[in-house]
Amino acid sequence: MTLRPSAGSGFWSSPEAWQYRSFVRRQRVRRIHVDGEPEGKGERGRRAISEFQRQVAAQQRAAGHRAMTGPVALELRFVSTRPTPPAIHRMAKWALDVLEQPGPTTALSADRRPLLYRNDRQVKLLHVSLDQAWPGHGHPPGPEGPKAIIHGQPLRDVVEDLRVSHELSRVRHPHRRDWDVFGEDDEDDYPRVDPLEEWDTEVPRPTGDPAHDRFNASLLAWSTYQNTEVSQKRLLIAMDRLVDGAISSAPYQVSESGTRDGGGHRNRPELVHLIERHETQQWQDLLSFPMMLPLPGLPENSADRRTFRDALYASMEDFRSRWPVLQNLVVPIKVTMLVVPPQQGKDLDNLALDVLPAVHEVLRPHIEPWHFTPGLLDEDPATTQMKRERDQALKRLKSLNAQSVTAYQVVELKRRPEHPPQGLLRLTLGLGDGYDHRTQSLWQRTDTRLWRRLHGF
Image (cartoon, rainbow, N blue to C red; front, top):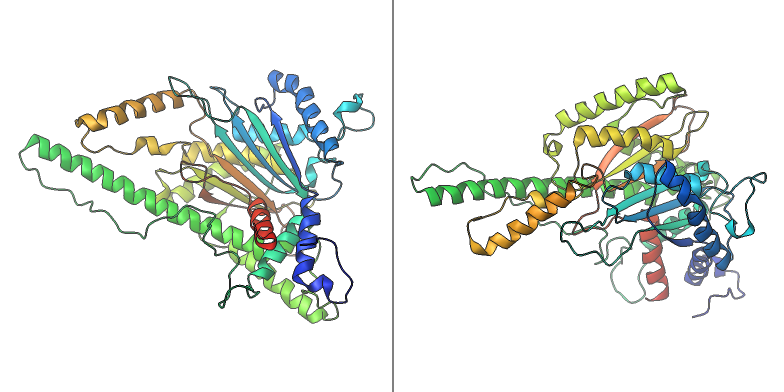
């Protein structure tokens, strides 16, 4: 397979052109691994800046990359082996600041250039995840050491990848007789959840046999937990797919992503207008979906920020009361924030500093909730070792930020004339990092699948 464009008037609309463009876009992805503990603000963070920037700059130079100057899509994955790591949003805030290109007046040695972008306001798509991998209390260490994994790329490339993948969903596969739907292959992005078959939760009558009654009580607790877990997973995965669907099919609604050309119909302005209106409606429908939590308008100053925080907590409490199935979270969660920025702009990292603490305090998600699964027949010798291991795991979790989300993402959308001056903020929950699911940004998943499909891997 050649990746160099050949002559011919139809090349740039051919499958070969998709292959070539995908190859070129992939060369612009910044894939950076920084060894060492992720940090937050404070003395430890200040001491770690120099080494973090040195590793980033060295890998940027080795790949021939410079700091990006336009809008950026960024994924950050943190792995921490400390017993008390910073919260996920504080790690992200620190990394986003440190990845900025230093100004010309900053005294820096040559080996600390170039960095990832010039200003973190360039980041329009952000995905952050945290693996708190501290073994503790007899648990063996994991295969990964502490590090930060960074994937950054120009937003225009992400939008093009999403557009191509959406186009391929309507292209007939050359080796199949039916229509191959690009996003519905056997490698799903989310764990399989069995069809909802509720376990019996009817309270059994006492039998008079202590052993039998203990078993009934254990079975009732286990069945109730399983029903809750399946219900929450199905709901959260459905919301993840709604968000993924809006980004995939209407990527030009992301802030500063440019404008769609109507799928090649450059001389059909009415078609471009129709597509634009359709994509705008998709996002409006998502923003008004019942599972979308409407949050207060974004603050413009410090006084507004205090009011904003109070309103955040009130909105969270109202959401929790309206959705009983989410009142006791038994699966890890991811938070998605959809933002229409105010007229003066807004840093995505600062937004998370306000929103995520409210999520942690009100919804109280847990990073490893499966340890609280009720056991069956605890007196059985076969379950004694499992109970001991669970107790050790819960003891370990007391030293970690156990009550927190395991991933979050922020999507900045374009401002439109009908939007209020203070902007819009909507929040929804999705499935977080767990024993059967590893969160990853939609654009990284699309890149992997697109590359595999186009190049036969």
